[in-house]
Image (cartoon, rainbow, N blue to C red; front, side, top):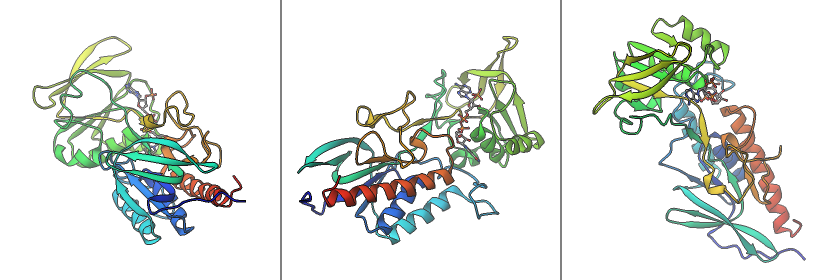
Length: 322
Ligand code: NAP
């Protein structure tokens, strides 16, 4: 005989944690498959896609796309299929015995929900440099989001720290506002993809300081300069600038999952190809999971797969076959 579930209105087939491309795609697929779907999104931490200035490698959009607009479209599509939305930061996920099986209790700041399955799509947040002056001058010239803050730096000088896709892409975006953008990179070659490198080298407003690291952000109540050390010759200098944008990679938003699902040494959730984690009923997708390529298009693929896997899991659970 199958497991008999006492479903009530607070019990979902799937709760998706995270409202970026991965979570929203999972929501579109899950609610279109007629699963009772809740998506919990954080308002405190805007996702990377929302804060991306210009997305030009999402297939089918030759003119480029604004990240905020793209996410709004995803959301509307999920709503149309019946996804419920709540805002809040999830604090914990805990297994609850449910007849012969397990359901998941998801706790956010003010509410808790029960669900037969969970999809983790919490993404990752920008890493900080942990330099003297960084916290004190955050919002006073120190920023981690060019789309949010770039316009404050019209005709000013900006330093961008990092050498990956994000740093170079956002440095290019910041040239729309700033007089000069100095890219400070710790090595003698960029990590960013070749097309972005070519554009940066061709842009007269961008200068690259190779083999250099920042050691302090200077300024009393706003950024005035960046203290820089050249790693080759050991020389120190002050780069005069009004803004410091930090793009040195990301940390996955998975601390609430410690001890619940297997994480790798950096905190990324380990999944198989079907987005299953180490625990039955918990799936993960997008930038929060261990994977090779973190892009909107791969996040969408992950999200669709996670929803499909969760649907199969829940169907079997309801039929008592898990
Ligand atoms: P990333 O690829 O990890 O690059 C981080 C950069 O910051 C590297 O150049 C690294 O230097 C530097 N860095 C790291 N820690 C540092 C420190 N403490 N001090 C100084 N520099 C430091 O991160 P990302 O650029 O944010 O990209 C993240 C992912 O998103 C990547 O997979 C990327 O391809 C993807 N992405 C794609 C696009 C696109 O396709 N258009 C746009 C944005 C992001 P080293 O090079 O020496 O390691």
